[in-house]
Image (cartoon, rainbow, N blue to C red):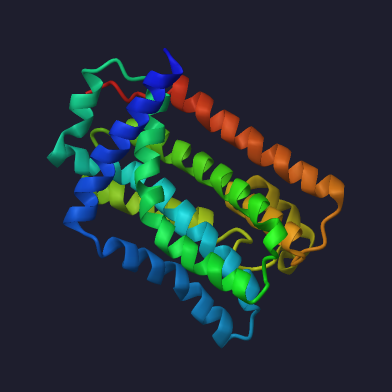
Length: 247
């Protein structure tokens, strides 16, 4: 399949997924931003550091929407029937997955931009670390979107309530339980758990490049390798294991 065809398919699918949602429920942008801000409120109440909360909020706005929307997409498809239209076209599953994942990424941009601007304003994230921050967030988004997409293709017969609950559980479990909103040092001897999750890997890299965490060069390299490996595995699962053409 030609590269130009892949890019065109991605853009068309993104538009099909994003534009109707933007017209139907534009308040979703504000709601997701508020959800990401709630942990920051509790961090401030209990005397935690807002810098760690802002890192978590950026990952939450991108990651939570990535995994949740990929699963909930199959529920909305029962009404909109967009997938049936796309299945009839010669579209590669990776193109469909990227297009489906880009739509919620558009929704997350306002919240992510706000939290990033606050972090830059208070110098929690130095300007020279901005590129690394964006790259790690994009990798995290790609992994979570791939996971959500593969899971959704195996749940065609699940009820809408089951899909919604599963998406929320996965989103909360991947974003709020690992050391994303809090430093890994709080886990003591279990701090290695942070390497096992794409969200906490991204959070660790952002903190390392921002000076919020003291990681050795070897640990930073391990984090990059782990995050890249997760992205490759999720892409392979989408390409070879996703049952996206089954109706």
